[in-house]
Length: 297
Image (cartoon, rainbow, N blue to C red; front, side, top):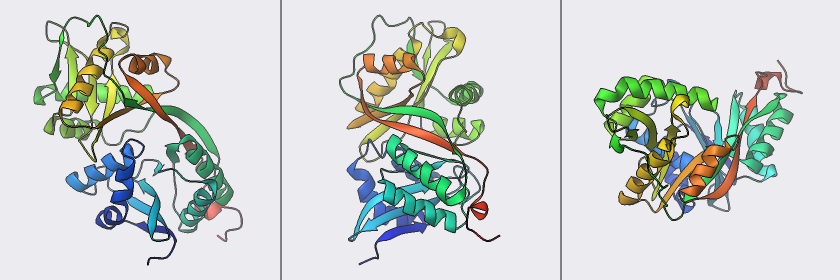
């Protein structure tokens, strides 16, 4: 039997061999870990950047109880942890000299880890975003639909996708998981973005979807340019992407909504999405592990 505690690795195959079943037990709550690891498995370990990803699992009595992952330069991602386990993980990462820009997890876990990271490194956590995870119940198309139709974005739409991706990232105040060109190319290759376009063929809104993993698909990057909002385009394209996910065999269709945006939260509820859990993103100051209290320099 493996010893209890945190086990960290840069080996994706090892991580999935030990943690994959645990992640699949709660596919909605673990949607980000599932889709990130699937992207790395399919597209290679540098899909998100040049620096090696890091994975970890918490084992107790021979069973995996929690998982951690990071694809630099992104924030640390965590499954649910109690404060004691969050503190143990923070101490382990700080002791190994890891530098973390922040953490993204369910609200209680993120808060516990942020407080622990401050204790062990001296870095100051700042709450940057709160978002809610929704799961699709009964899909209810908004009525009336705006004039137009849905279509899959193709190679001819690459520049449009890049432009809207940059605008979307700026609008949510986030760091893109990859550059706009790579993001667009990856989505075009697997028909991963749907446009809503007007009757004359002009794209006015977009929504993406992750690949089917462990029975779940996540709707992502729902975006309408500011000048075109309030006309029902986002609702229409979200419904179409959700319908396509169900048709593809998804048992669970999920999405995240920024809690600072009541319009999007109201929209998702109207079309059939139900709240699952609230998540939080904390950013950390630049204080490094070497500067932590009590550490020699």
